Length: 80
Image 1 (cartoon, rainbow, N blue to C red):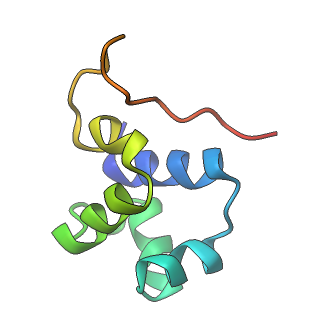
Image 2 (cartoon, rainbow, N blue to C red):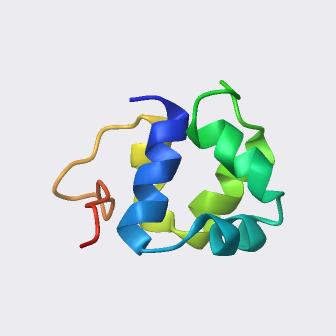
Image 3 (tube, rainbow, N blue to C red):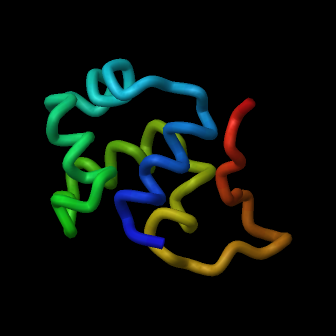
């Protein structure tokens, strides 16, 4: 799973649209779209760290660390 796919999974799991998510991250919506679609392969540190600060339960998932039972980290589940 690419970082863009992971970011999209977090956004979807939280039930947030692109406009609201990009506003929360203080980035242009077009930038978010480019990252999610894989046109930007490596989003900048500020973007990823902002997501981790807003949604700390997804930090390990986003940066590729293992998620164990004793860690308060989760893999996002798609909202209905």
